[in-house]
Image (cartoon, rainbow, N blue to C red; front, top):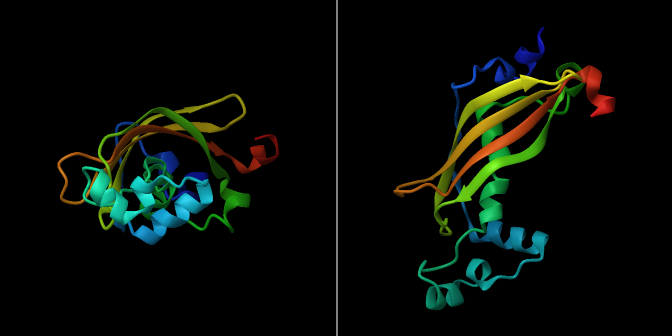
Length: 166
């Protein structure tokens, strides 16, 4: 079985092709509060609904931009599911490599649902056999005119043989 089949075809997707559209994720205040706690960020715009209603134009709390960004991996996994625990030895693994570009376009109000649209923009192999992917991402907010986020996300696939060198 090829590595591409173990990665559900992500390596076989041609640049310029859609990878897919994720499931909707509803953003709850509890999710935002846990993110605030984990990142030690107590900005009331995100965690104090009463303050946010009175002091911001958003009518309530909004998700942290970095929280929205952090959902990208989950969203991509709903498009390209695989058993990442048992298949690493035979299929390799992916590492986040960063972003060429990322813009937070619209705030995401608590209670909103978002989903990711993914497209493979570029793919190339390096001298160690790793494959760098550039993935175009748009995070749509349900029933909103503008997206929450647009980005060029970089990921590196590390084949099983190169695991110890990554």
